[in-house]
Image 1: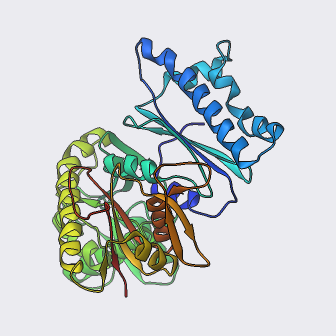
Image 2: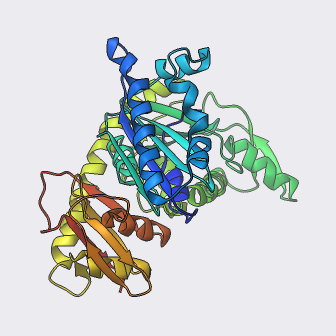
Image 3: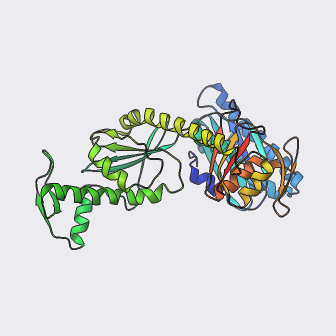
Length: 388
């Protein structure tokens, strides 16, 4: 039932699934006596959400039916599955419920502020923050003998099975052989098994096979990472990396590889090598975004008015949206009149306008960056770089 959120999950939550949308965030505990408080916290959040839904005008029977799947989780005599649920928590929990969508539950690595929000759209900003703080990335380990793809975070690596990603160089070469190429076998590098390669001189043959091999690796990876902003780490010998760079279109490929052959390394060992590179790359990327904003804010391409940003996001013109963590702007946005009305706090009739801007930006394939609350980059804690 539980899973760690990915950007694809956020994008799915961005879809208009019909209102009202319930977003619940609560801190949880991995161990200790405080774990007994977590079911009580969830029950309190459900009670609060039920009150807000009643204010929306939802009948009591429909409200009870909406939260029925969670009743076992906060019952003191809940089933064994519910007890197991609470034994495997991280720092926080995110729950999304709507009458027109299947409920979604995510385990978050870090603690979150407890909040229950009912709005026309799901409140995804804390979820985005959790993903961003988890420092998600991808690692591609390539050698002549095997190709492995991992998704990673600051805590470790998880293997990914990707359709059409070749398993080895010989698999690619044999594929060409089946398509009618004339091939023969000869010994390659010392210690390597015989390999089928195209006719010609050895250096020419090696160049041709490496080019085809890394092209076959890069193509499905380019599709898999489309519209992602996660750093990509390449692990392999320098020669293979040079071919891969020519074939890979992904703009967030880290410029230096983890050099060498890593066939015998397990995911934990690869993570140890990759993590310092990823941290450095993410910090450089974040500073680059802030530098770009510093240049754009004095031009028509840069705006820091939530009203102008929402209109541009509705039109798909926001390339990059910067939001200061912990700085909501409550109110409503009339999409037909293209006008906003601000409020002092959250309520049944208003919502976080920054969240709306983020949802619309993501739906138009824009980028959303949450900036640490201590960094001041605009008066309202919101800024955008426009495409045009």
